[in-house]
Amino acid sequence: MNFVEELRWRGMLHDIMPGTEELLNKGIVSGYIGFDPTADSLHVGSLAQIMTMIHFQRAGHKPFALVGGATGMVGDPSGKSQERNLLSEDVLQKNLAGIKGQLEKFLDFDCGANSAQMVNNYDWFKDFTFLDFIREVGKHITVNYMMAKDSVKKRLEGETGMSFTEFTYQLVQGYDFYYLWKNHNCALQMGGSDQWGNIVTGTELVRRKGSGEAFALTTQLIKKSDGTKFGKTEGGNIWLDAEKTSPYKFYQFWLNTSDEDAKTYVRIFTLFDEETIKALETEQDAAPHLRVLQKALAKDITIRVHGEAAYEKAIKSSEFLFGNVGIEFLSELSDGEVLGLFEGVPNFTINIADLEQGINIVDLLAAHTTVFPSKGEAKKMIQGGGTAINKLKINSVDDTYNNDNLISGKYLVAQKGKKNYFLIIAE
Image (cartoon, rainbow, N blue to C red):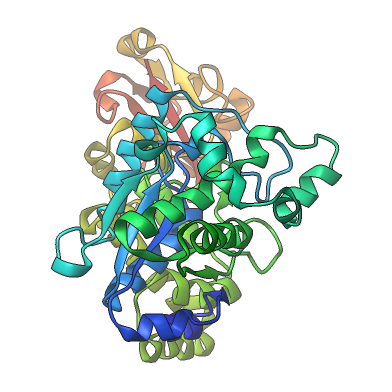
């Protein structure tokens, strides 16, 4: 497998330094990508870089995942309009542990010569004094060179300007490349296209300080066809951590992509070969309503991130909301999964002590909650047979519900018609 050709046909390649392909064709190359430790989980925005590393390793090369324990204390100005908050060492250590656990799902850390390796730049920066840094690093890169970078220019032209801390970021990242080149024979840095300036500073430092040669490769930044930001929803980031984004919501994120985006994403985020992808696209074009491409994409990514069992549960969750799975399914879910399943659905909280005494169904739906705006409307809908609790039709306006009706001792699911769900939580 040819790494650069693989990125090309998948539409991932953005820019590549002359000589990089020749280097990669000679034998095993060590290369790295940096990951930002501002949270204890990566999100789908990081997946393109993870996929780059997977392809790199599958092509026989050795990937280094650099987690920026030191750079996380500084903040990268690339693509940002203002300076971000700096993190404490305790928070960083927690974040590093979370990220390492996630990367181990994708990369093989025990496969011989090209085993993946994780490094933390805090390890080589923690004892590096300021005076040592400006002597060993700063003297090799001119201010003119640093000022010419787009990421610096944009911030200097903006209203907030740029702190000295952020201005030095490219030197810190550049030194990472130099350190890995010198100590781990790392000849290539990869990253998103917005990182080109920082990466090239590293190759320049290797040339000037080490009299060596290093290379750069960047991938396309992922965008949605409608121009909105990839990886964001109204609820915020789509995380790889199941506690932050439930597998059901994660699966739905990919399932709900547009046809145009699905054709792009299936190349970038799956390991399907070109023949398989073209076959899926043919099926999709013949019957777009079946969403063959989206289903294949969502299944592949959900299984690789969360596992087969979580994928099956996500499918059942979808079927539950469309009426094909019974109410007992809710008892298989954790509280977080239940709330994730009903995210965006009206939620009501009632007093569990009141429910213990028994509550008339009309009062439950129109007084203790506002499933219906009035008791009159509730009675009318119940008498018309269009209301259910826990997927069982309510037979009479005189029915009473109590704690025995709770799912997992906590939940009642009300339905108005087939598709209008309401979650009632007894506390």
